[in-house]
Length: 168
Image 1 (cartoon, helix red, strand yellow):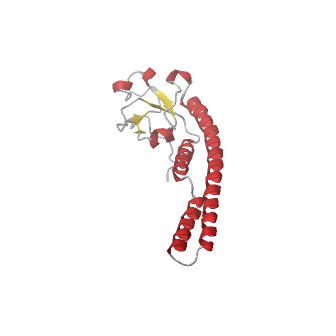
Image 2 (cartoon, helix red, strand yellow):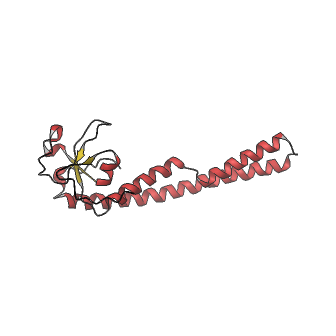
Image 3 (cartoon, rainbow, N blue to C red):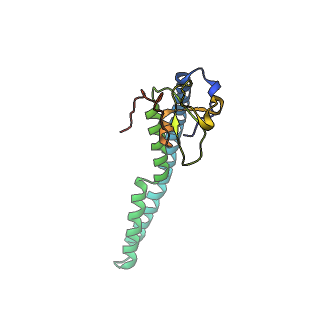
């Protein structure tokens, strides 16, 4: 998830923005899950086929270093078949955490900021703590609270309280 393209003026309030963005993210998550499962099944099948082929080659070899090497390679391929796309799995789990954290929550306002320099998110457009480069609300954007927390934003001490946390 990235900071949404939903501008401050595109939603009537935080609840409206949160509902809209959460439903879009749910649809995107469903699509990502289906795509991941398809790619995982294909990759697992390829690893299993290579593992079985290596086992057949190892069975044809007399006892010795070549047979041991082939059995070791077959074992590695069969283990890879259990989790063939670890990076894609971690990315999908991250999306799931964001959607879970944002479920039923209003959207929050974030200001664009420099990478690795995250500041605060705001629940209320009337918050007097919106300052600096984001002083003008048109430079703020809506995002889901889970996405804001995931990239390092923290709740505003004035208006950011009151959001429940589902994080473990």
